[in-house]
Length: 173
Image 1 (tube, one colour):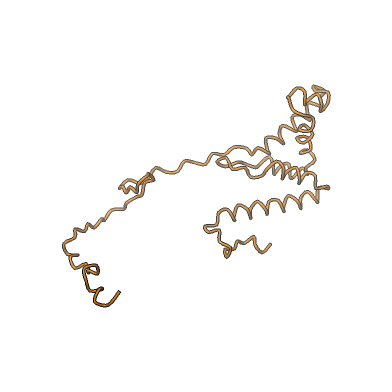
Image 2: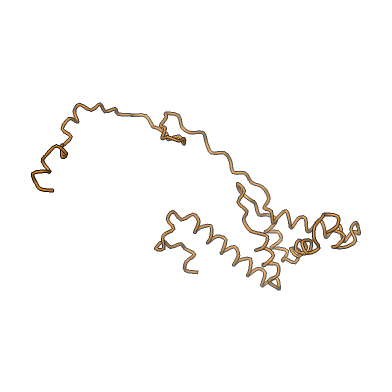
């Protein structure tokens, strides 16, 4: 493209800005979520309160306590009888009752866990790994490591950009 072409029809300056109608809005505008961008003078409705419920692992630990109490009372003969009456496999009943191997302070922490808006704070598989860690001291160490991993994965998921150059506070650990 030569210099003569740049001064032609295609390179026109906007000299008619005075003719354009501008409107100054002095009130706040709020963007409403819809297919198209919609601005309105009324604010959007407030976000609903998060739905909180006991975490699934807390419910399973409570069930394990209930089943063990029924066995101890003699209402149910043994684990195999529990499995038959609940329609579970004996292995699944063993998995549930193995949660009772957790240290008492960890059991209290699990029972206090909440799922917020359907997001579970911990999987049962991770909790079983903590329960099978060994002694209560080893369980506490495994619990701390599991909590740290969960926080790091949550923080990583919340980072705005997933580029290789982005770092989180968990990268150093």
